Length: 422
Ligand SMILES: *Cc1c(COP(=O)(O)O)cnc(C)c1O
View (cartoon, rainbow, N blue to C red):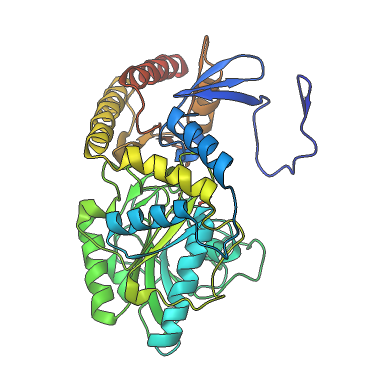
């Protein structure tokens, strides 16, 4: 594709992208090659927790880049030590492995659970995961995800007497779809979110862990209920299983608390973070209780894991996000966005809104999500960037410090657009 003087053919064509090239970002705003501006409520897919190019991240990168970029993972470095200590203190999970992507952190969680099962559970290796789940794009994390075609070899989900939650469990649980990249990694049977019986039915001698997102993000902002999370904790305790929470999308303030599981009062054995932790740079983390942390030398690692350039950014992000006033601000902004979405729902006869903090979805009630995303991007004089994870849904994931007036502006743009689309 030719866009102005840019020729894009050298890029592998792995995603449908609009014909524009982003060249600059500041706060809530992105600017493309033609100088057009967009109000950004996607923010790098929920990664820019402090908006585009925030001063403290630019400063942390510049300072660290002038001091030490990569001593190799074979040595300690001060930035990684500090970030790990802070994450351990904030989460209560006292062992931390720093990684570069959410998928890598989840892959590490899967490896840790399998090693723990080999050592303590007679070789148990199965990890019960969920229809609708998203855990990443490595082979194992694809298998752990509950997306049609992604999860080849897991046992089928138990038949459920309960209806599947809206948006979750909609897709079939493997087998009946032609799979991608076969053969898949086995050992990820699928249960249904918020259906404890479907989990119980899958627990057997090979089971070592239950893994889920507190709110399924890619499935369309589908929350696990507090009751379900508490029941899973009790089930895991009863059977000696690990509870693994994937907080790659929900963690680091996104839902109004530092970790979403705090709101349910549930403590996992293993937790993963990513996205917002790096504020836009590749940084993720695998956290585990000390007694679960059973990797031996050589079991886990990676050239960039714990590199000080990224860890310094993680520290800068925590400096801001871990403050109680900052988290209170996320709750206020979330409530403000929610009021707007409720107003839009009644004005335009939509199906409703849901979510927590600044991870929210608007149910349009009909399959016009992609059309709305495209029309919003083309709005004059400034575009609005939104995401549609399901054909009837819009997802909102602005910066955690998004100005209130930018929320008002986005809601006004959407109001006008929905009126026009009828
Ligand atoms: C985005 C996401 C991942 C994958 O993270 P990457 O950094 O893209 O590898 C895993 N789990 C959840 C819940 C996510 O939202």
